[in-house]
Amino acid sequence: MTSRITPRLLSAALLSGACLSAQALEAPLSADTHINAGLPSSNFGSLPTLNVGGGASALLRFDLGTLPAGVTAAKLVKANLILYVNRVGAPGAIEVLGLNSAWAEGGVTAASQPPNAGAGSGITVPVGAASQFLSVDLTGLVKQWISNPGSNFGIALQASLSAPATVAFFDSKENTASAHVARLDLTLADQGPKGDTGATGATGATGATGARGATGLTGATGAAGAPGPKGDTGPAGPVSLTYVRQTYTMSPGGAAVAASCPANTYVVGGSCGYVPLDAGLFDVKVSYAGFDGRSIYRCVAQNNGSVARVLTYGAICASATTVSGP
View 1 (cartoon, rainbow, N blue to C red):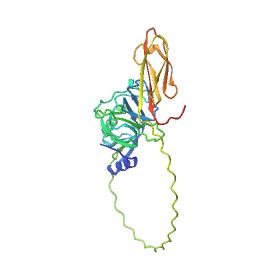
View 2: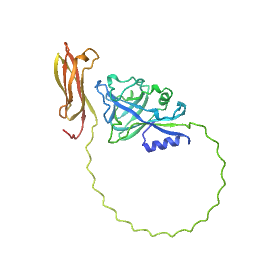
View 3: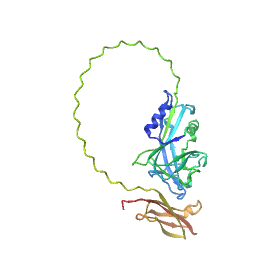
View 4: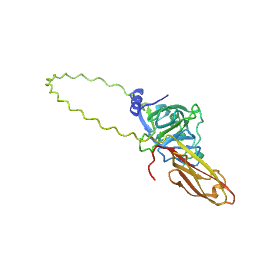
C-alpha cells in the first residue's frame, strides 16, 4: 500500500491505526547514496540527492538498534519508509528491493554494487510530482530483518519494470537545503500483558457555580497593513543530468584527455580510470582528475606498462538557467 502524505498526517495515521498500547519508534538512516551504470567506478555518497532512473539506482540502510531488547517480528505492527521527492525528471514508478550483501556509503560504485532481490520482485510505488512525501509499507521486509539481524543490508530504489523511463531525485541525508532525510517509522505492539482495571473511585461533590463576570468592551479594529511587494521568481533548478563517457587508448607513457559537456550544460562531476579488472590496473596511474572551467572535466594519466591500455573518463553535466561561481 502506498500514499503521498506529510509527516504530521503520517504520525496521526500511525497512532489512529494502532492499539492504545502500541509504541512508535523511528529507525535512523545510517547510510544512503546512489550508483550509476554509466559511471561504474564513481561514488556519489556525498551528493545531496538520491538519483533513481536514467541508469542510476539509490541505496539506503537503516539502524534497527533503537528497537527494545528482545523484540520479535511478531511485535511489529507496521514499518513505513518515508521518502521526500525533491525533483521528478520523468514521472512513472520506482521499485523498492531488499539488498543481499554489505556496502559502504563512501566506497560503493556500480561496479561493486550489492546484489538485490531481483527486478520485479519488490514493491512498486508511483512517482508523479515533486515536493511531496512518499510512503512505502516495508512491514514484511523489516520483520525479516528483526528475525535475522544479519540480513539487514538495506534497500535499493530503481526504476520499475513497468515504467523504465522513470527519473526521480530524493533528498539524501547530506541535503542541508530541504533536509527531508529518509525515515523508517516503526509501530510495535505492547511488549507486556495488560493489567486489570482498577475499581472506580467515589464521585466528588459538585462545587458551587461562581458568578459570571461582566463582558468587556470590544476594542477598535486596527487598520489593515499594506501588502508587501511580490518577490521575483527564482531561476529554475537543474531538471536532468547528462553523462558524457569516453575512452582513449593509451600507448606506454602519459596522456591528457578531457570530456566536454553539451551546450547549455555545466560540469558537476566526473570520473577517470582504468575499468577492467586485469593487470592494467597496476599499469595505469591517474595523476590528475578534476574540473577545467564550467563545462570540461580533465584527466591526466600515465601508462607505466609495455602495452596499450584503454583509459575510461567522463563528465556529469547538469542543465540550469543560471550558474554562479568560477
